[in-house]
Image 1 (cartoon, rainbow, N blue to C red):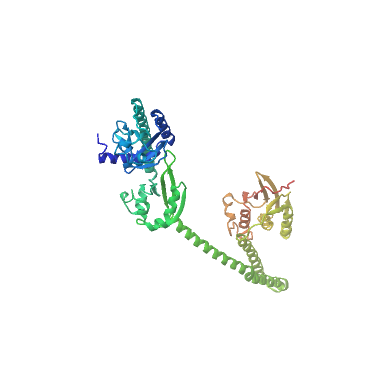
Image 2 (spheres, one colour; image 1 turned 135 degrees about the vertical axis):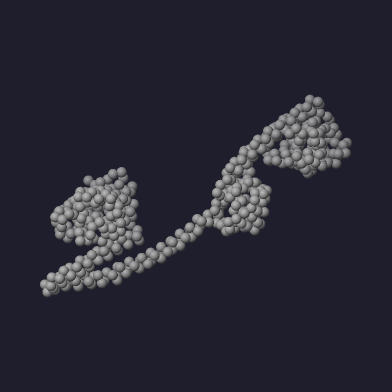
Length: 536
C-alpha cells in the first residue's frame, strides 16, 4: 500500500477529489444530517465535514461553527487524513505545538479538543474527515470513536457510489456523443471550461487538422483570440448558461476555404441536471447562400422583365391598336362603298383583309386580357351570378342571333369573386360553346350551378363537337388549337384566360367531354365563411 505522503498517492487522491464534481455528488442535506449525528453522538459543540485539497481544507457541513475554508497547513484534517484507518485525536490543542498558533485554537472559538475520522474511498484514498471539536480538553470514548469512524465510512461509501454513477453517466454520455458526432455536419462536444472533448471527422476535414490538434484545446486556442472574442465568445457563454443558441457566420476553414456556416450550440446536462458542456453543430450553408444570391439575381431580372412587359403592354394597347383600327375602319368603308365596283377577285381579297384585321383585333384583345392577368390582384366581393350571366348573354347577343342558338341559364348563386374577371371567364366559356358546334347543328348551351363539399360550381354544358380525353389538358395551353381557323376561328387563348382567372380565385376549372357528345366546363369556387348561397 502506498504511504499517504507518497507524491503519486497524493496525485491520485487529488485527482479523485476534483474529478467529476465530487463535492456535488451528494446533496447538501446528506452532509448536514451526518454532521448533526456526529455532534450528537460525540456530545461536542462543533461538528464539521471537510475535504482537503493541495492548499486548503473546504468545509461542506458545519454545526456550531460557520467557516468555509482553512489553509491546509492550519488544518486538523490535513493530519487526520494521514492515518486513514483510525481516528485522529488531539486532547488539548493549546499544548500541541502543531496547532497552538492556528486560527481556530489561538482565536475564537478557542478550540482545545479535536477528533477526526478520515473519509476514505477506493481502499486508501482519504479525501477529508468528519470532525468534532470542543472548547474543553477531553477524549472520545471508545464507543464514540467507533461511531465517528463508522459515520466517516458511510460518507465514503456514499461518495464512492456517487462517483461510480457519475463515471458511468460520463462514459454513457461520451459513447452517445461519439455516435452523435459521426455525421455530415461539423460536430463537437465542448466542456464547461470551453475545451474540446470530442470532434467528428467532418470537423477535422474542414479544419484540416488531426484529432490530437484539437482535443484538450480551448475554443480560443483553436480558432484564435480575435475571432473568438468578436464572433464566438458571446454565443458560447450563452449556451453554457443554459440557452439554445443558433446563429450563422462566415468562417475560413483550412480544409475548405471561406464558407458560410449555420452554428447551433445546445447545452448538455448530467444526471443531476447540471450543465456539463455543449454540443456544437456547424452546418455548411455556403451552397444555399450562393443559390439565394442567384435567386435574388433572377428576381431582379424578373422585375426588369416585368417593367419591359408593362412597356410592351402599353405598345400593344396604343401603338398597335391604332393601325389595326385604321385598317378595320378603311376596309369597312371599302366594303360599304366600293364592293360593287370590285371584280370577284377584288371582293375576295377584301374579305381576306376584313377577316384578317378582325382576327388581329380579337387576338390583340385576348393578349391584353391574358397579360393583364399576371399583374392583376383580383378583388373579392359578393357577386350575384344571375345579374352577371344576364350581362354575358347581352354581350354575346349578336353571336347568339347569328347562330340561332338556344342559351338557357338556371338559378345562379352569389359567390365571392372579382366581377370583371368572372364575367370574362364565363363569356369565354359560353362563346366557345356557341362556336364549336358541328355544321348544321343548332347550338344549345345550358348554364347551371350546384353546391357540393363547400364549393360552388358553375357548369357550361353544350351540344358541340366534344373533345377527346387525350386533349383535355392540352386545350388549356397558350395558343393551343385543335382545329384549323377555316373550321373554327379564334386566338387559342380563351381557355388559357379562363383557367388563369379560376386559379386567381383559388378554384378549379374542370372538363367533362367526349367526341360527338358535347362538353361541360365547370368552374369550382371555394365558398368563404361569409359567402351567401342564393340558389333556389
